[in-house]
Structures are given as C-alpha cells and as structure tokens.
Length: 174
Image (cartoon, rainbow, N blue to C red; front, side):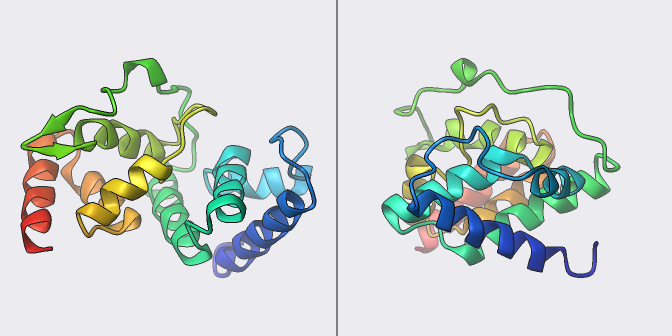
C-alpha cells in the first residue's frame, strides 16, 4: 500500500483521536495489530500516533496535516535512506541538550537538531516526541514548519552548521 498510504494513516490518526477522547490514555493496546503492522511498514510506531492524538485532544495542535507531513518525511527517510529496515538504535533522552540551551541566541536549537535526526531515523524513545510543546514553540518563534525542518535536517546530514545557518536566516526573515 504505497500509492494511498496517506489515506490509511489519516484513518489511523482519526481513530486514535477518537480513542483518546473516549478515555484510552495509554499507548498500551492503543492500536490494533493491523494498525501496528501498517505503521511498521512505513517506519512508524505506536508513539508516533499516540503522542500526536494526545496533543491534538489536549492542546488542539498539531493538526492532521502536520501529522501527515511529519510522518511523510519519516516514511520517505525510512524507505529511501534505510531501505525499509528499522534502526536498532534509540536516542537516550538524557543526552539531549538542556531545554534552555541556545545556539547563536536561538533557544531550543541545540535540542531539536538531535531530536529531528532521531525522528527521521525512527530512533525516538517513547518518552520523547518530535513536535512536542517545546518544539512547537521553537517552530512558531522561528516561523518554521516541523516537516520543513525535517527536510533541512535530512539534507544537512551530520553538518549542524548548515541547519544553524538556515534557522538563523529564517529567524531573521520572520
């Protein structure tokens, strides 16, 4: 299911939002085996859906379009860069830079770069969300869409300076 994977992903998101609204507030058993298998085929897992459904219900953001765009970037990386093979690695959240750290006066930038790389590679642990409230504040402050940031991170590879310069330029323009 490649030509219309987005339709299935949209259905899963809507069902997840409904489940959360009905009181299912734990990722355990949140999705069916069929849904989990589909998600695995595009490089996603239960937390990729649960976190977004929870934040949508509780905070009204991120919306469905953002969810789809972020996970399209993940799917593309999974299929093209990883050859459809999930990573065995997982980011250790305790190694992330502090939430207060800055680069060139831009708070959160040191933290979001490794989170974005981990998101692209499917290496975020269950306790860390890409596009959490802090990330969303960073994106809004710097006039960046989360999926756009993932594309910049993907294209920059391991070169943080490319990302930093791009964010600085964007930040000055907004």
